[in-house]
Image 1 (tube, rainbow, N blue to C red):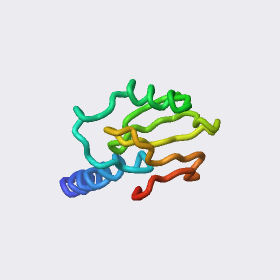
Image 2 (image 1 turned 90 degrees about the vertical axis):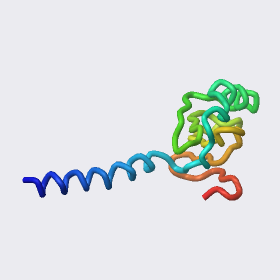
Image 3 (image 1 turned 180 degrees about the vertical axis):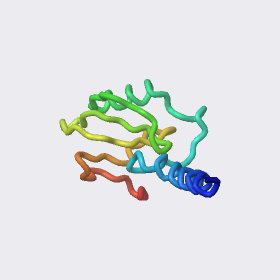
Image 4 (image 1 turned 120 degrees about the vertical axis):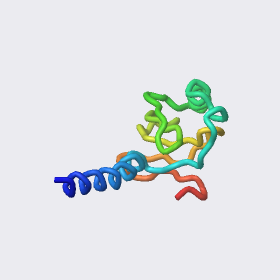
Amino acid sequence: MKLKLHLLVVALITLIPMQIHATGRMECEPVDKENWMTETALEEKLVAEGWKVRRMKVDGGCWEVYGTTPEGERVEAYFHPATGEKLLVARRGKILFRADGVE
């Protein structure tokens, strides 16, 4: 019984980190929260650029935005948490934009 419990605990500990990082398409460099753009500031920046923002959340240390590009494409996009720089834009699994240096 103890062996089964031990194996279960080891399996859960092994799987939990993979699930945490498996939710998004990318991870941003670590940035202290006090240096992040606020959700409102990023949304205002994007709207000024012609985006329509439906929903935003934090994923992989980045701002993840679901919305429509200025060109009218519904996308999922990732932005740098401090600068608001566009890092990745995808639609239905297809990468439409990837910033230089983003893996």
